[in-house]
Length: 470
Ligand code: CS2
Figure 1: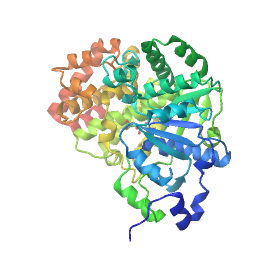
Figure 2 (figure 1 turned 180 degrees about the vertical axis):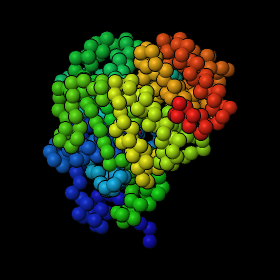
Figure 3 (figure 1 turned 60 degrees about the vertical axis):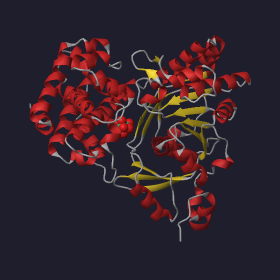
């Protein structure tokens, strides 16, 4: 007999004890989430669920998906219910009930949600590339056809187009309740970036009155998020099915560890601070630590690991040479760029990378490198060079990326253009995310060129070993 699909009805019939999760239909949808993928489900949705269990409130989540109908097809037939598997020493399954519904290709419904007085917070996870912006200027890309179509007045498809459209409707309704937009993507000063893109969009529409209203009524605090959440595997779905006795096509698995640091703002929010989130006046220190130590390491090892034929982070750190590289990178370069010794950080990170059954694929981390590397590896490289040091191991990671690009078959648009550059100088010149001063640095260029040569001549493993030992 076919195993039934998870829903409030089937759960009530088979595992009624699990039904004390939040009932999204019984509370107001105070949160609109743009980009409801695996990360949001395991992180902000799980924290919102926990916050609602300690302090009830109108904080159900209405999600919007942009990358195909997958999230809507998985969650809507399940009444928004899904399981989060927390990997680690105390593995645990949590059922999440605070998601009300997922909208896909329904710009009218997104507009109505944003305009309603019920909506007080918009959270966003659309990845570094999802904002359609130019990393050199932090403004919208001029040559982006999706943005151009939104600006020309079709019902908007892009995140920024939908945000502006909904805020316009909110203003027209005379809605004065404050609303807060929280970007949860791994960008530097993500709140400022989104605020700037929204203003840019209004500017291109020539709507200065709307721009002024948004400036006065909408807050865009920056945030730092941390939790390793790989794409869901078939194995994970089978495991959840065995556990629940029901098919859950929206299940996700990630670390039990979660961090959320939010620049404090006026305005209502769920009791996130009672379940581990921190509201602080300034996120910059937490942001640099997270982007450089966790994401910087991730990106540096992803390409070197792929070149060495490895599949996952856990497989990679089992190899002594790569574990040594992570220690040397964090303790010798990215940690010191923060003014830190970072030995404990390196060991903690190695444990996270090795989390059993986390199955974090290097190919997933390797995507969108041209947009990820600037805030992860270029910022610390620049600061070390300014201080008169040589970021050799960071540049080895960047060389790994360039080598990977040159051999890759499928690439995103930004990376494809760079992969086609005939030499290193032209690649650096074309890389919009690379700051001008770093591009002009002889030290930076030569360190990458040396590492590229070594990878080519000696192979990636021998190069990683030699450079780590030096
Ligand atoms: C990863 C991140 O895929 C990637 O680029 O570096 O998704 C990383 O796992 C999270 O930011 C960890 O908090």
